[in-house]
Image (cartoon, rainbow, N blue to C red; front, side, top):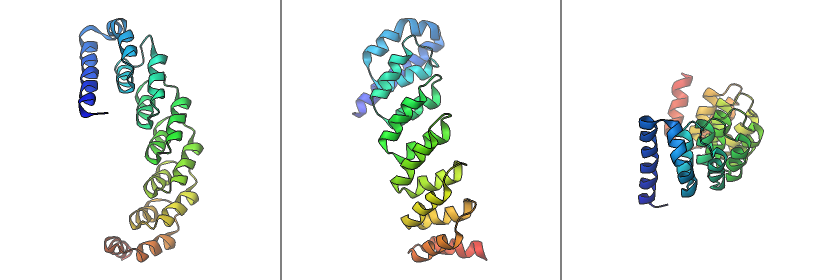
Length: 195
């Protein structure tokens, strides 16, 4: 998508938002539901449903436009900000994307998310940051599996954060990763904290 297309989309969404303030949601829905469906753009459908709090007459059609985009970010935002979103269907989009960041956000922020499935995607991704975040913010997470990913990543940054912030962390293993790294910053941090 080109910048000029994004600008047009933002202009459409802002215009709809202004109209709802002037003439009310009910009248906007009455006059624009068919037009929005006809545009067939997932960002516009998401913005429209968000502005109208999901009170469109053709809500499911707008939601299907969003789902058909197979975009984990739009599916996450739709579930986060639009009442009545089909969480399992949007969850499938996010899972299929294998994007560790949006899988983390989805399971953290969306009530009814399939936490074990999203957690597995994050573990398989090998992404140190999102494995650390999952251990830190998802109470029911498999902390040992996420810790193993962080240790195997050899990331001094996330080993430092993990051993400092996640209860039950293998402190010695994380210190070893930090010592073996070439990161003087994290080596100094460990020394400062331990003195």
